[in-house]
Length: 133
Image (cartoon, rainbow, N blue to C red; front, side):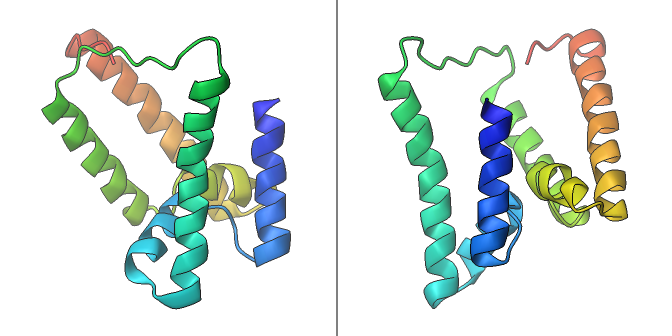
């Protein structure tokens, strides 16, 4: 059901706004844009956060995150993801959901790269570094 909502929201975004729902691009534009261009981006991102809070409020099972990784490790990991997102000209939502749906060769390659390095990262952190993330 969640995947259907993600797909539907991507279609609505493209049809209604003429843009793909690439979250990293939306976030980057919210930081660097002005006026109406910034407004819709900030509202979109606020909707993502508010939907999470709404789910937490109405759900009988609260969202919990358990990790053995230190906050410093998580910050460095987040910065590396941000760097990789810029280097790859988009994130998993832009390439993996919207790009593949548009049969973009670049998005197929980017998504395959994301997946490969995700597998490698899980293997390294769990088995070589023994960090349970």
